[in-house]
Image (cartoon, rainbow, N blue to C red; front, side, top):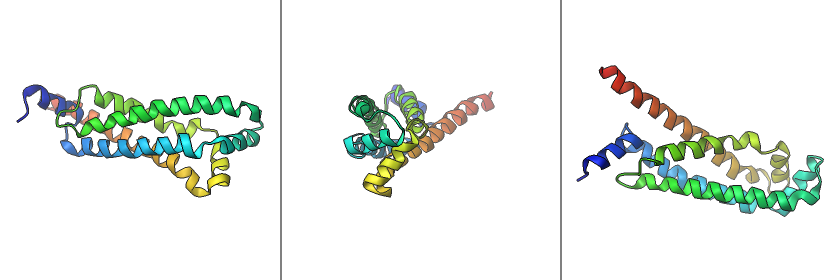
Length: 162
């Protein structure tokens, strides 16, 4: 049986019940794997050098760019992996804001990645080369929207009771 603190945590994380927290946990697993694939498989030396050529940038800068890109990828891998805490009976209070920030910023990845990256990935891997980023970034947008709607609805409910 849950104590009062655990009930409050569940209410804070998912005022609509366990459905959103389950979706968050599953999505976090998918996004963790997708981010790892994108950062360490799809964006390799070949793809990145080709992207630099397509963007009329210095291909010699690819190595340094790749190091920074993978460091950022590692941060997102860890941040996405934290989302599996949603499966706990009483997820921590900080989880919802952390998942929301992670997914809003990850969803922006579609706009942050240069268009030449998509072309280079398709040339090197075929259309499947775009899937990890498309699923992760697109899914992050959907999850962030669902969490935002849940927060707005939860905040309206107490106001409607007054």
